Length: 144
Image (cartoon, helix red, strand yellow):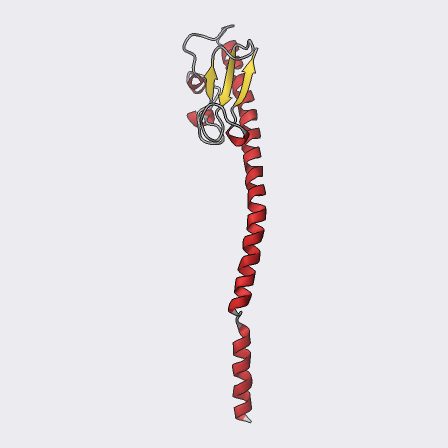
């Protein structure tokens, strides 16, 4: 009788683990799912960063207008820089980090702006270079 118990215990031990084939199949399924889901997920992240950059550029343009109004100036002073928004007795921004777009590049102030605007606030996109498309496209908010 004891011999048969040992045989049963050995069989149970062998069946506790996964076979190499089962592991390979499971890993393959996970890899296929990751290949399908990852690009879509990364696309959503890129879209979110683009929307955030548009919102932040709009906010920066509003802060520039607020700066001009609070300083009693109707036109952009010569040499004006976005950094001025973080300085002075009542800064509009808490730190220089607030001047970085979602990709970690500094927002650009372009004077005069395009299409007859006084100025444009520009994010150069993910690549940090002028031009491009998709996530690399420039994001511009201007003020008239």
